[in-house]
Picture 1 (tube, rainbow, N blue to C red):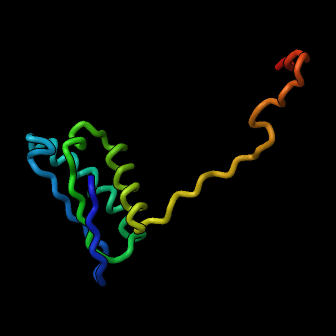
Picture 2: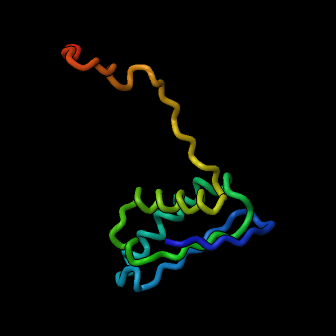
Picture 3: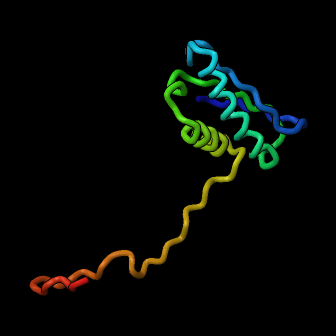
Length: 109
């Protein structure tokens, strides 16, 4: 999947290019478009103004809904339309057992 983004003054709009090379069956092409349209509706208010056109590749035929949504989010982040995902902060204490000095038996759980 690739993204073409033209910044503008209008609210965010979506365009999808899903050819017969992606899936020769209309039902498959429509499934891909349905998943991406639904995800775009949830993100629309967070996106900067402009036109977003996604061009799908043949690998989309075998992708399920969550994979298509993840690819869409990834492209939005790479383009700068969505902020990057912050990694959760984990506490360093308790993540790994303490190292034993050589020759001592490991602590029992």
